Amino acid sequence: SFTGFIPSRTSNNNLGPLAARLSRPSRGTMRMLREILTRATAFIIGYILTYIFSLIHRMMELQSVGSTPPALIFLARLFFPSQGLFNILIYMYPHVLTYQRNHHGTSWFRAFWEVIKSGGDSDQRAPSRRFTSIPLVSSSTTRTRTSTRRLRNNQLRGYPNQRSKEPVV
Image 1 (tube, helix red, strand yellow):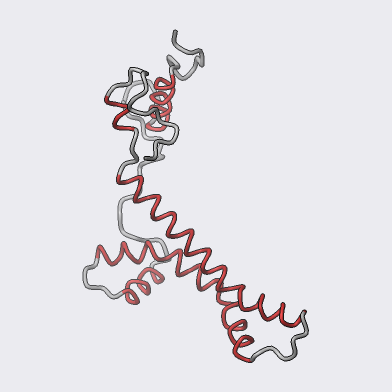
Image 2: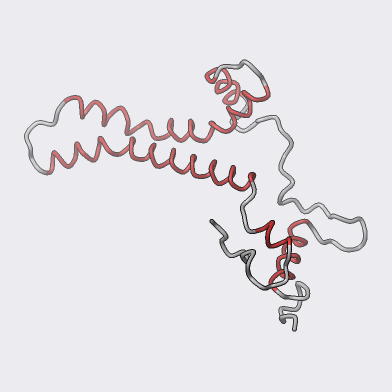
């Protein structure tokens, strides 16, 4: 099983249930990793489709095999300038899915057109507050969610607070 750099459940580090909870990636993390992998794979496939026919055509010219088949020349001339189209389709895909979720019964092409008309990234949901600098408390401290997370991680590693990096004895 995947544990990464998180201590395992059997280690004797007195973290108790926290280590058991952290030892497995959450569903949200797995979904995000799957989305990243899907998008990266789509970019790689788009890159290969863009250049493979032109590459084969040029290699055949260098080998002086004779005349290059007209179908290969056609495919090279069709796919090489299509790289921008592939990038747009890959970039818009998550926004189109969000549009379809918010407007039930919308076809993929209709949702794609609406996303294009709206500027490409208007997926009508609240912005993520994951990396905002909104204070958690209204007192004089300006600790944000990110710095609180960093402080908690440092405490798990054995540091007493964020400013002093001396391990707890």
